[in-house]
Image 1: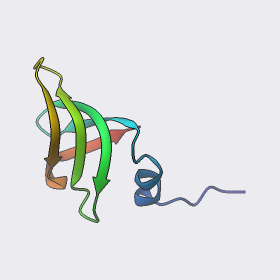
Image 2 (image 1 turned 180 degrees about the vertical axis):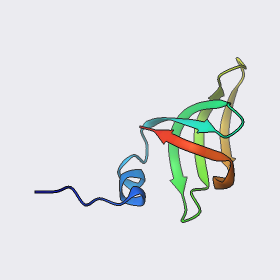
Image 3 (image 1 turned 135 degrees about the vertical axis):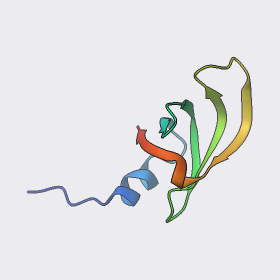
Image 4 (image 1 turned 90 degrees about the vertical axis):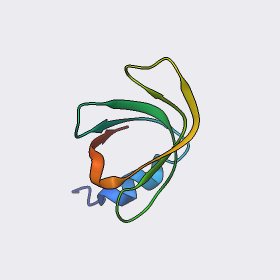
Amino acid sequence: MINTQRPLDILGKAINTNVTVYLKDGTVVKGILKAYDLHINIALENAKFDKDDKEFQMIVIRGDNIQFVSL
């Protein structure tokens, strides 16, 4: 049987799990996926950028800037 999940279905199952978001400018952001929408705008909790030691309690990344999301 073929798995016919759609990308948004997969993101929905990843809520409250750690994800890595790769942005178009080469930046990598890791955090806990809290929410997303149809435009793939993503809200991350406890987010850390790859080149920065600072942790952000909550950030929203605009979907236009996302290259891909790794679960």
